Structures are given as structure tokens and as C-alpha cells.
Image (cartoon, rainbow, N blue to C red; front, side, top):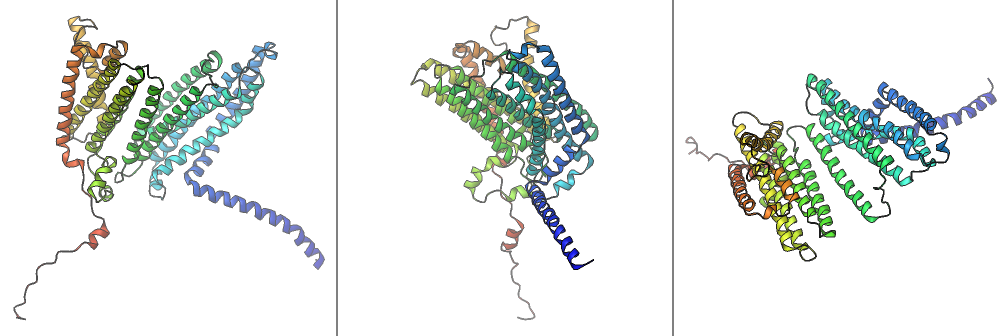
Length: 542
């Protein structure tokens, strides 16, 4: 081969090598960027998109959407040529989309974490440099990418409904966004449920329960989509400012619950020596402020309606009772790692005390949230008396708020005392705590009903259902003068004294655990002065 031929061959191969190197460089940078963002995201996305389950589901979605297109056009022809049939076809497409979004993807997220805990591969993740929150976020973002694939597959069909008239772009974007956000929330719930147990036989039973739950929610979603798109159009008030304010409020509430669920999932896969409670309690506090802020805003904007002032303490008491039933079952033991994170100064320690794990500190944290919510309601009622709310109406709202506060504090305090007694015999965990509070609430509801059946007394007779907080709520909302009656005031005073007594008893019993001491780290112990033994004179040298 001559020199000229060699030069020509090199000149022909150099562009190919340069092009190949350019693509390899981009691919290498993209892969490194993906690994930097979250290795779990890359792994889960590859496994999900290459799995047989995804291929089958994606193919069924495409085939079903094509069958629905042909069948809907056949059923509506020839009216579809001139009548607005976009909502009719959109309902079908949205129902097809909801099945993978509500059933397949959340259940896949559940199984992805549950299978790793069953097979023992999760231990490799736990000892890596990835934090528990990064692991949960990686699996959740992988589910989001699968949602986007399904959405891109049905996007042409959904766009086709706009061409058929009867539906607008804002409604299309709104309903698809709601379905997308619901799928993200359900995927996060699936990750939480995957951490409930590690035993294989319980995981099998839990898988059946989870798939039935998601199928049930899919049926609810189909019903809502049909009513919101095809039957009722009164909610589409896009030209009103209140509609977008409510939408933004719902988005903030949704974001707070999603944040709480992610924190719960991350806490369940965190080592027991770590602080599992700080992130969850911060999420609880965010939800508390959101409820006070938004319902307070509504109460100020509509001061004539005192029902909004009654809804605020109802939601807060229900929220803190549910959270308190979990917090009362936390372990009182603090690991040395957590103790080393406790601030050194007493003032700083008192300020951050609510973020330290423990049932007694969590109990005080819940009581503080309850009291602040009721005080905020009383302040809003007092402010509305300067506009259009009468003094008697404000008094009714405040009395109702303190009545719910007394109920909630009583049940939480009694539950904390029961769990404190149980811990003397066995370890009462969070599951036992929730069951205990639920049984207490059921007893408060069923015992009056039992006495009513035995003695043939009517529902409206006095002192029948005073132990039932739901009965108190219904009577107060249906009859505005209910909380002003003398017997109700006397009962609420008695209930308040009992709740205060139980609260003070809990505080006295848990006073030693309220402000824990800080443990020294290894370096601090090395640097601390060592007490040397006294010098002893040697008699041989003297």
C-alpha cells in the first residue's frame, strides 16, 4: 500500500473517530451527571423501563386508547362532526391514564422498596454514602419519570379532544396536573407502606392490601373524573380570583403532606441511632402554620361566617390528635449519637428541645401546637368583633374551641399515661400507641351507645354522649346555642379540669426526660482534663 493510500484512509477515518469521540463525550458527561444527581434514580429508572411489567402496561395503554378512540367515534358518529364531544372522549382517555398512574406506578414503587428489604439488598444501600432521604427521593423521582412516559403516550389523544370542542386548554392542564400530583402522593404512600414490615409472609399479605387499596382509589378517581369533566362544569371558575387562591392553598397543603410522607418514609429506613423525629416534627409544624394561615385568611375575608372559626380548631385538634397518637409511642431512649447533637447551652437546648426524639418532649410539642391553635382562633374571633361578628358569636366560637381542646388533651394525656404504664411491662411501640388511642376513642363512642340501648334513652337526652367528641362537634355545628347552655358550660369546665390534671401528672412523671443532657464526643473526652492521683512521696528518696 502506497503512502498516498494510507493518507487517504487516515483522512477518511479521522471524521468518524472525531464524531464517535464527540458522542462518547456527551454520553459520558450525561451518565456522570445522572450518577451525581442520584444513583438510585438511574438504577430504578433503568430497571423500570426495561421490565416486562412496564412493556405490557405501556402496550395495553396504547391499545386501549386506540380502541376507545375508534369506539367513541363510532358511538358518536355522525354527531361528532358538529357537536362538542371533547369531554366524552377526554373522560375515557383520562380513565385509561389513571390506571397506570394510580395503580401500576404506586404499586411498583411499593414493591421496589419492599423487595429490597425482603432480599437483603437494602443493607448495601444503607451502608453507602446515600442518605435515607436520597434513597426515597430517588425511587420517587423514578416513579415520576414513568408517569411522564405514560403522559407522553396519551398526549396526542388528549390533544385530539381539544379539537373536538367542548373542552378548553386550562381544563385539560388542570385535570392532568391533578392526576399527576395524585400519582406522586400515592407513590410516596407506597414507599411508606413498604417499610411497615420486613417479614416475607407479612409483606405478601400487605401487597394484597396495598393493591386493593390502589384499585379502590382508582375507582374513586374514575367517578370524580366523570363528574368533574362530563357532568358538572360549575367548578371551572377560571376568571375568578378566589378559584386560583383556593388552588394555591390546596397546592401548599398537598406539598406539606407530601413532605411529611417523604420524611416518614426516610425515618423508617434510617438507623435507630439517628434522630428520626426532627424532620417529621418540622413537617407537622409546617402543616399547623398552613392551617392557621389559610383558615385565618378565610375567616378574615368572610367575617360574617362563624363556621370558619369553628372549622379551624376542629382541623387542628384532629391533626394533633392523630400526630400525638404516633408521638406517644416513640422510644424514650436516646442514642449517644443523638445526645452528642444536643446543644451545650441551656437556652439553645430549650429552644430546640421539640426536635429531640422522645414521647415526653413530643407530648409537650403536641400540647403547644394545640394551645397555639386555640389561641389563634380566639384572637381571630376577637378581631372579627370589630367588623361584623357579634360578641356572643365570638364567645361561642371560643367556648367551642376550648371544648375541643379539652377533649383532645384529655384523650392524649390518658393515652400517654396508659402507654407509660405499659412500658413498665413491655415495650409499647408506635403501633401499640395508635391502637391504644383508637380503642380509647371507640370506647368513648360505643359506651354511651350501649347505655342508650340498655336504658332505652333517646339521643337528645342529657348527658348521654358527653364522652363522644364527634357528638359534641355535630351538636355544636348544628345548634349555635348549644355551647352556651349551662349544663354544657359546667361539663366543659369539669372536662377541662380533668384534662389539666392529667396533663400536669404527665409533666411531673416525665420531668426528668424533658430536657436531656448532652453527651460528650470522643474528641471532647480526650481534650477534657484528667484527674491525676495525688503524689505520694517515696520513703527511699526522702
